Image (cartoon, rainbow, N blue to C red):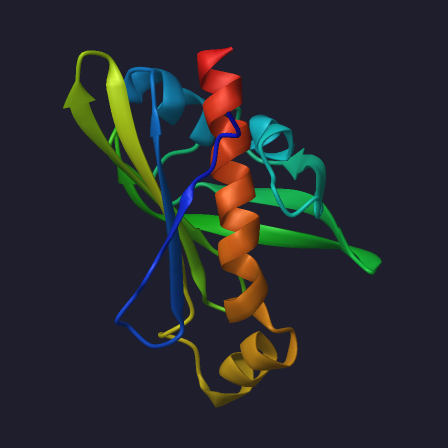
Length: 156
């Protein structure tokens, strides 16, 4: 049976989300999310090459750089803007949109993980880029792939 994440219907403009249940405690999942060096291991977009700067473990206000490639190589610096141990982590970069992971302990060692892309806070120029790059159409698929990889990483 193929494992799939659910792409969620979102009522908020310029936002996308996907969800999966992982048979692992939230602390194990959060440890992976809070390690920028691990992000390439579960990246469903295949755009992250590696972490190039930042702490070993993220925290509120932490900055970390990533080596990326979407057609051409580039580097991006992110800042953690929300951090609740074992429950939520959110980061953003210079274009201001955010990536969040929200974890809900379901009991019996299982955790619901929701990944959210939110470009609703972007200004007009930043929002233009979101639409120019078709992010709202491609990101849900990439997020679903990321969550499946995260599940495999945590359950394996």
